[in-house]
Length: 65
Image (cartoon, rainbow, N blue to C red):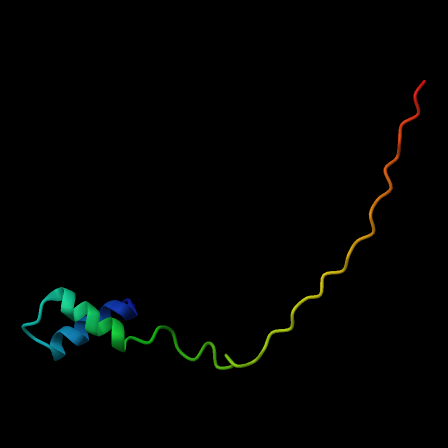
């Protein structure tokens, strides 16, 4: 399977012949959409975990002999 980014760069090179490679990469970067619809629900707020405070341990003092 071909890397999707490289396939997109090749397609951009075919669409804009004669341009420099750096310019091709800049154009491809603007039009490339990474992944698919993985993050359909971007607007959903995630619930934050509430950290519960643990009780402090009492220091056990050693008895002197």
